[in-house]
Image 1: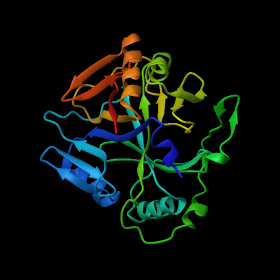
Image 2: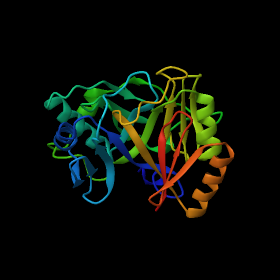
Image 3: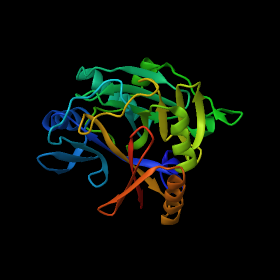
Image 4: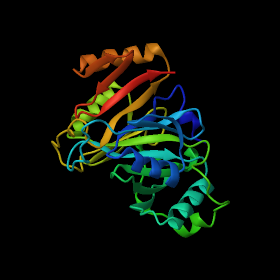
Length: 285
């Protein structure tokens, strides 16, 4: 159901690289609680996968790591998109059985989601999409809401004993704290080429490619003018954005340079930063 929004010609988030305070503790959570497989592991980092082949999440414990700071820009949450509603039911049942604390559960009209955090406080959304032909648009904006999740109805769709995060799970979107929504909109829309799907006043903005509800969420809930997190502190190191063609990426780089964004090429990788210091790796597959 979600493939049209997470493959070319859409521009989409493919994976996320996090900094954690204790690699072993984080591995216990991501492997044993959420059910990821370890694709590659070193003394300082682990690359995690769902299907045994595709990196979806990297966790790293750098030298001199600092605890997660408060009231800074950076990660609000990354969002794991499951294939089907029964997958979300199985996951919720599992989390309740192991008594892992949840932070919320919401019906967003376009999706149903549960919220939690890893041991470092990095926010995680686990969700499923409703069929896109049921989404409602008014005056060019998508109607989304935050209503209570029908937990009882969801749990009734449990189909099997939970074993691991289900095959077909992908990185559905990322939601970031930024310091200024106007500057962020210029970067993500005028620079990267995303479209605005929904605005929540002057507090939050949801952006997409190819008509998705959002590939990127932005908010100023940590304060307008919030500073970037210190280097090597727990949180987001960078996310990876996939473009459909090299030409498309070159056009994006030109637009980013015109609006004064930073572009760095390192080890054949192209990395930019939004005005709030959130780093994004730009790739073509």
